[in-house]
Length: 293
Image (cartoon, one colour):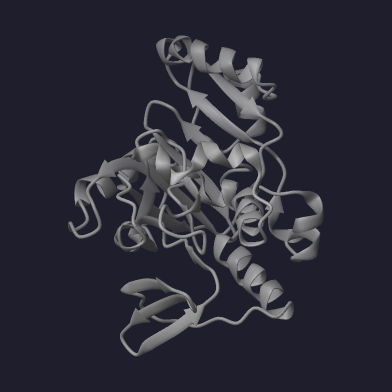
């Protein structure tokens, strides 16, 4: 997720699980279809290991038996509690002088005095503003002078309380298209893609799909303890928008990370810090808003 010194500085070591992740192929045809992806990862230096069904069972003994193969990524890291990660990052920022304000921002305007943020009961002027509102960034970007084709990939989640971990790492049954991730005291089932915008009601069939799928591996699960819908901010070329708006170098974008917000958050922060301090990296041009003009 980030460099080791960042993890230690924010006190996140105990929330990082370093035992890889696993793709589960229940059909030989699905594994054969993955050849292109495996070849590309090998070319890029990704450490991956093909496993037999018996080897998968050795890694995940509680997983229901299946045939075909697995693909193991030993270097993958996951977090045991994303909410706790965010709380500790916020605490680390506050300890270094950051101040937090909870408010709705509905408008922004640039002037000689800086960037003014407006909203219900809000009127704040800052030298620099970072627009990092995820799937809700598009209206603010329009006010900053850029019409960015941001779309919402809706993803669905179920969680089940577990007395003991059912899995040792995140497992993805490839034919079902979701991840089963062990958390602290619970099992999270998350996945699917629905291009449904921000306002449409949840689709119960998506949740039912996850529920039926996970029971193929753990038939004795009880009822879900929670379920929810999340919004992934995604762009047509699968790259985020990072960098200044067309109108002003004082308005800086940082959104559109799709499925990889947590993964790409640290490097995005470094790029944003460079733009704020006037030290932009040349490679950041690949993420500029101007590519959509």
